[in-house]
Structure formats: C-alpha cells, structure tokens
Image (tube, rainbow over all chains, first blue to last red):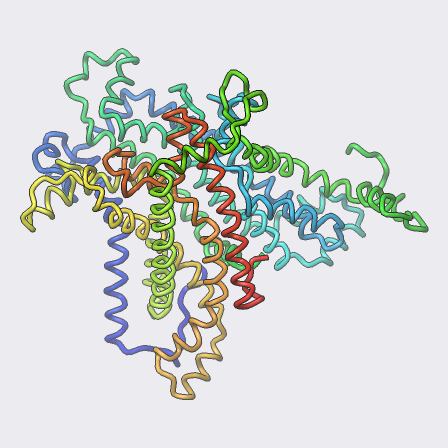
Amino acid sequence: MTTASRSNPYTKGSTTAQIILNVFFIAFSLACILPILLIVAISLTNEKALTLQGYKFWPDHIDASAYQYLFKHSETLVKAYGVSLTVTVIGTVLAVLLIALYAYPLYRKDFPFKKTFNFYLLITMLFSGGLVPFYLLYVNYLDLKDSLVALILPGLSNAFYIFITRTFFQQTIPEEMIESGKLDGASEWRIFFQLVLPISLPVLATIGLFTTLMYWNDWFNSMLFINDTDKFSLQYVMIQMIRQAEFFKTQLAGSGVALMVQESVPTESLRMAMVVLSIGPILFIYPFFQKYFTKGLTIGAIKG
Amino acid sequence: MANPVPQAMNTKLATPPQGRFGRLLHNIVRYRVLLLMLLPTSIIFFINCYIPMFGLFIAFKNINYVDGIMGSPWAGLDNFRFLFATSDALRVTINTVGYNVVFIISGLILSVSLAIAINEVRNKLASKFFQTVMIMPNFLSMVVVSFIVYAFLHPEYGFLVKHILPMFGYSSVNAYMHPNAWPYILWITKMWHSIGIGSVIYLAAITGISEELYEAAVMDGASKWQQITKITLPLLTPIMVILTILNMGGIFRSDFGLFYHVTLDSGALRSTTDVIDTYVYRGLIQLNDLGMSSAANFYQSVVGFFLVIGANALARKLNRDTALF
C-alpha cells in the first residue's frame, strides 16, 4: 500500500496497546487467509482420507493426484481457461480504452457538451431497467445467446469508473498541457494518446485491475447467456461442479476416457483443485497493480 | 475523420455564428473529435442501460415469445396483482431490505473501526502486510466463496461439521437444510468478503487528515479516544455519508452471488435467503414466468430509483456538501 500508517510521535500509543493491536490484526489476517488455505489443503488431500476424516487444514499426506488428473484428462478445463482468458483480455483492454475515451472530453473545460454527457452517465447510475428487459434485449433482439460478445458487452458500461477517471484527469492533468499541445499543432487524438494516457497510468492500472477481476470472476452473464459447453467460462464450470456431483464424470464421458477412470475420479479434491486453479491468476496479477490500488480506491470515494 | 474541415479554418471565423442552432452546429464541427471519442461508449450505454429502461413496460404486458414484446397484449396491472397476491412479494422484500440494512450498518461500523485501528499500527511493514491480506477475500468471486463456505459446512466432510461441532456435542448437521442459520452464515460471509477492502478506503481518507490537527489536540491534552471521536470521525463523515447513500440506493438490489451461490440455491432455505434478485432470476430463467418476474423487476427498479433520490435529498438536507448530486 502506498498509504501506510503515519509515524507520528505525538499520537504514539503505549507498547501494550501496540501488542494488542498487532495480535488482533494477525488473527484477523489469519481469518482472511485460512479459509482460502482450507480449499488448497482439500485439493491436496487423498480422496480416501477426505471421506474418512473430512476436510482438514493439514492433510496427512500431500497428494497431487487431483491436479494430475485435471491436467491429463480435462478438456473442459482447457476450454474454460481459454474462454475466461479471451473474455478477460479483450474485455479489459476495450473497457479501459473506452472509459478513458469517455472520461477525457468530460474533463476538458472548453468542451461545450460536457454537462449533457455527464447527465447521460448519471442517469444510468440512478435508474436501471433491471434484468428482464436486459435479458430479452440480448437474447431476442441482439441474438447474443451462446456468443462471447454477451460476456464482454455488459461489462463495458460502467459509469462509476468513468467518473473516477475523470476525477483523476482533473486532479493530475493541467489544462495548460492540453493548450500547449494544441499550440504545437498536435491533433486531439495525439494529445489524448501521447500526452494524456501516459501520465494517467495510475488510474488506468486501477481501473484495469478492477475490470480484469470483474471479467475473470464473472459468472452471471455465462449463467444467463451460455448453454454451449464449449463456451463455459471457468466460473461457470465451477458452478456446474458444485451443483452437480456428476459433472466431471459426464464431461469425461464425452472425451472417451470414462471407462478407464470411472472408478477413481477424485471428485471432492478435483473440485477444489479447479477452484485453486481459478484463483491462481488473480493472486499472480495482484502484486503488479497493488501499488496503484489505494490511490484508485481513494479517488473513487471522492465526490465526482 | 468524417469531417474534412481543418481546425485552422474554424479559428479563423471572425464572427461566431449567430443563433442557438448556429452555435450548436459550430460547436459540433469544432469539437467533432471529442464527440467521436464519446460515441462508442454512448452507444454501449444506450444498449446496456437506456433500451432496457424503456423495456420496463413489459411488466404491463401479458408477454409471450410468439408475439414478441411489441405484439403481446397489454395486461394492465394483472402481473402486479399476481405478484402481490402471493406471500412471495412480502417475503423477498423483507429479506432484501433486512439483509441490506444490516450489511450497510455493520459494514460501515466494522470498516471504519478497522481503518482507525490499522492506522494505529506503528510497524509499517506489518501494517502493509495486514492491509494486503485483508483485501484478498474481495478478489474472490462469489462462486469461489460458495466453495469456501461449502468446505466448512459440507454435511459430511465440512470442517465445522466434522471437527468443530462435535466438540460441542453436535453430530452431523446439514446447514443447507436449516434456514434459520443462514442470516448468520450470510452475514459472516458478506463481512469476510467486504470489510477489508472497505477499511482500506477509509484508511486512505484517514491518512489524508492533516497531522497538525492531531498535534494541536495532543498539546491541549486530548486522549487517544478524544482524538478519534473529535477529529478522525468527524473528518471521515463526508465519505461515510457518500458511500452510505450509494449503498442505500441499492437497498432493493442485492449481491446476487451471495444469495444464489453461497446458499447453493437450496429450496429449503428460501424462507430466509430469497431476495428480489434471486426471485426475478428464478422467474425468468428457471420458471420462465415472465409476467411475475417482470413485475418484480419493475417494482425493484422504480423503488430503487426513489430510494437513491430520497437518500441524496436527505444527505443534502444534512449537509449540502455531502450530497452526491
């Protein structure tokens, strides 16, 4: 975090207070991490041990067979990873670009239609048509059932991120910079791409992280619009797994290995291994964005 | 670019064009590039938000897939009559509002307290570590969270069921069959998922408070507690109000994933876990009951709108500066 606690001699508490505080936060941190570790532990436990001893934090023997199994047999996993990755990458790049493109004119003081377009955004935050018309529009009129577009398009409209980005522009980009760019004969596009975007990296990274997470973690649009098993996202495969104990067996039946493995499918640990594999990428990208995170959050909370 | 008029020519115009329409046209030409930048997102908002708004009238139609939205006959208030005639409407409304009120109030108190507490941690490295870890649950999707809850509550293997409850003399318990336990389970889950990230927002605001205020207070002999109640809390109030207004506007909406996935959509739990969102979804997707679903949808959207407006008006009355718009 960029904004760590201050070291202020005047407000310094007693040592006892510090110890109590630290103990409390260590306990709180454990409460945040341990449930995730339980999932990891289950995924690494032998199926037999699970049925005998239940879910435990510390498996007696580490057993990676669930992972081996996933890598060897699961076309489902590979496809789902592909879908999630495609949607996340395309969605995030498009969303960040479009958000910046919309926020920039709203920041320009000389732009006469600023109020109109601000209002256009504000309305979407106040009033929504809700699920039913949205669903009918996508399915009956835009014909997006079983299309990856239906997974990307809904995430592209986010008024809140646009307001955050505009506020960032207002706070960090001096109007004079735009003026001098114009005097040098740069076109509006050039000013936007070569002057504004490069110095806006902190906010773009913050928005980028939020959008990446949103797309990677999205299951709702899959649930609404996707029936074709080849287009299941990772999250949707997991929904199937927790609801239908037989999901993996039926999926494998299609891939021709069913007879060989039917007896030994480690269903319980397999599910959790899948969950671990879906969290992995998030924990991997987090450090890259982390330093921008608090800044972005604070700007978001400031009146837009 | 669509319009070939060079920028230089516009600036050469000696007299600005006269009349409202002339000025408008002049501005459109002059700012055509900026307008072009706004275009794609404007279209997306039109598709995702504006068209569905006009679709709200579906609630007044007796809709069927054959005739389409436009061709289906009008139903007047029949859909609403059916909806409110059942006990469903009352139940899902009470659940939705009840959960949201509890979540908003407890989330606010816990996040602010955590932020104030972590601000007092003097070891910078430890403080950073705590913050990093506290945010982590928020990065997990509700589907993953549902697996975590399931890992604790699985009727045979669950960690709580198998290892903790036996210590208190309970044997196998299937939580997914006990509706009365779920307000607590959902509350814990929601707080686990959200207070860490909530506190980071408040922490950022606290670190923005001027040092001098605290120094002056210490000079005057203020205790730690007085510093918190007389300086920190009042200065955090605007941000607390704004975030609460935003949340109150959503009081008729809920975290769909929490109520749908974490409960595994278990029919036995509906009395305490069904909210408007899950009700609308089930009506639309599982039961294909468009009439009831669109009526509930309309009810949710319209009441939600008035709630945001009302909450904002309230904030404006309390303090002009804290209102959202």
